[in-house]
Image 1: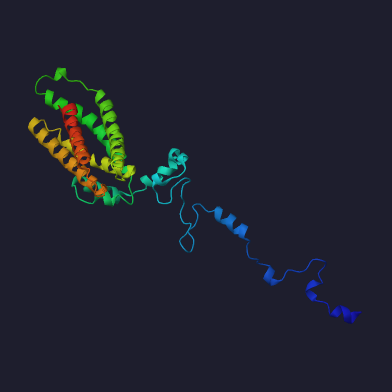
Image 2: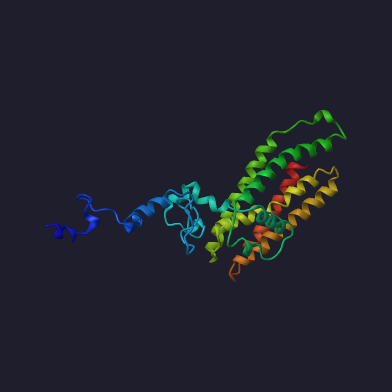
Amino acid sequence: MDEGYANLPTSHLLGSVPAVTPDERNPAPAAAEVGTSRLQQFPPARGANGGGGGYQPPGTPPDGDVETKTNWKGYFNVASYAPYFNVDTDVVVERLIGSVYPMDGFFRKIDANPDMYGPLWITTTLIFMLAAFGNFATYLMQRKTDLNIWNFDVGYFNWAASVMYGYAAVVPAVFFFLFQYFGSRPSLVRFWCMWGYSLFIFVPASVLLLIPVEFLRWVIIVLAGGASSWFISSNLKECTEGADLMVLIASAAVLHFALALFIKVFFFA
């Protein structure tokens, strides 16, 4: 009997439960446990092959373009528009310079990464500047005659907000549908981006329009309106895809110049 017991494995003599071997002390984690541990990391770590990296908000399209979304509910999700505000200062400054000094290729530059941060910032800044500087310019002009007839016109802000926001949002959308109707395939987001940046030249122009000399004011607004109109027309040619849409391009340039004249006549008369 003693010899029979001596031949039994010694690793199983510690009761009915087998002893833990060294290889079993550090078992490999199960697949479910690995997935659970990764979910606890925020944002998720990038994989070894570069896949699955970075946090993407729910509803964000793979290529960052809202127009490719198949689910209509994504249009009402704020996170869907987050990629259009994901730009740094260098990109915005470069696009501002490109809008002041019109150059060919602006539409191609924003093709891969159109943003809404710049247009929204430009339009809002222009609204406050037109309302404030418009009243101040009226004060400078009327101070020479009779200061008693001047008063601060709060309605300038309402007009500036209605016209600027309406122009920056509605006009690009109208031309987007017109271009599509005549066979071109533009992008609405890129139109909004381009039209928004085209308004930046009126920001420094509104400062120069404080000069209380009527002739210089007309020269300033004509130069600003002409440069901004040429910026619009030259970049619209890049999205025509060879189609003969010169009538639409000329209409956009004329409408943009009409906006410049409205700024001069209404706010800096």
